[in-house]
Length: 304
Image (cartoon, rainbow, N blue to C red; front, side, top):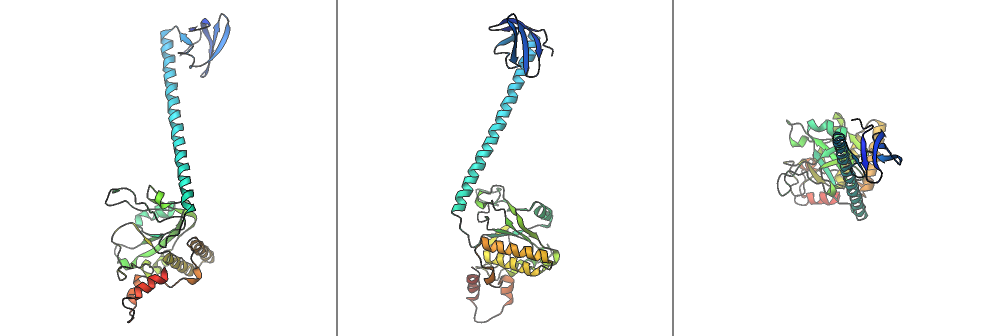
């Protein structure tokens, strides 16, 4: 579109002709002299092209620019809305942390499938799964007990192996800004520092059921459903302590020790006074007369 020498009308300056224009400015010669205007904004407000074809082209330009401005406004509004939500989330986190109390069972163990290993140990986050029933059926589970003091234990077993063979393949502290009750997508992210993946040799020596015990059914070694379950803070400390003992590489051993100390500090646990593991596997191996009916409660009490 060429607007040079095109005739225009101005409400105050009268008739004129276009002498120069760019994408944002237009200069018009009137009897009173040359005047500059915003282009194409001035058309439709102060200026009118006498050429219908040129006027139609400019009208389309104005419409397109208006649409672009509206789109920009929408983007800005969305960004502001995101900022408002982030600010609201920050305030909620601050209020939560002001009243934060350590739950005695604020750790989580996850059933990991081999197909998910790459994602778990590359992205360092784990999915809680979705609700199978109720009003929130199909929605991601919200891990309400998991917070900055929580660790996520990663476990797995071969499909041809019994549940007794479930081994520990890794562990990580959750991200320090994570608050379970505010989690909407079901993903629990790892802390940037406190995370580790065990070797196959190490995993084979760390059986999950040596630590975990269902108080109601202490003889049961079953995991019937669900991607994760909560468990006792002391049990997690026992696991981390045994990982320290397993490590042969000095650098890895020192890191595991720092991990244990950090975890215990966050959960107000004395790592020098940890009871020995008494999970379901160990319970089933113990045959002591006289403890029947009281033994399991004593173990739970010692671990709490």
